[in-house]
Length: 89
Length: 272
Image (cartoon, helix red, strand yellow):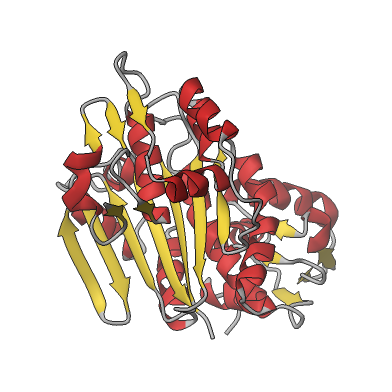
């Protein structure tokens, strides 16, 4: 299941916004057995706070699902953020 | 008299006298000094005899007008001084090396401006990737202002104050984010009651600890340090209360300084 992160905004900032986004992801997943792909295509800015909060939040709801990331190749700052919080290596 | 990051602590008594902020003898201010003055103004906000004396130096007056310092003065009730800056006639010269003073009262306001910071860093000369990363740093610093002060602002002035300056000859950018909040000690103490000084609290925060009880967070400042040093060969400076810590590739330097209300964080980054 692919979550298009651009639908949460071009600028993804703050834990507060991420907590709301997690609740929306839960509605989108809605019982689907598929693993989760967070697609960052067209996202301009992702702060560590937002990234940390949304990934931890999704993992709390779905501890058995694998989370992967796509659409980061256009933006090295996104990769730095995901690496910085240990989401990718 | 110049007031800037490197000397402001020594000149505090010349500029902040009781409830009066006296800039009359000042002829240069860097972004650190501007935010320092803003926090002093917030600190004095409730005082009956509060006053501000604007600089005599015309270049500095023009700079203060250009950064919209008058709007901040107006917000705090200094109508006369704000009007003086508004009516100041200055050469109609754009200066893309100066980013206007931004006071974001609310988180949404701050979020809304983050996109403009990417553009600003691009105008300053950073490539697209670095401009986005630098704006991410500002985003993370600014988040802290709101995350750690929501519901606890010490005065009725909340939010954060941001200003930036490009030094093209030095190929350096100075960005300062300040907030009139509870500071590191106020934020960290609930989780670490043993902390006894601002310096200890800042150091704890820089080590990846958070003052939020039962929450897993604290990566932000660690990453800000790492990116500032590794990606931008820069220095991160944080003052909170009476503590000032500078972190660079050379290590950490801790200094006791005269107190401010809240916190100031400065990124001095280099570009090629």
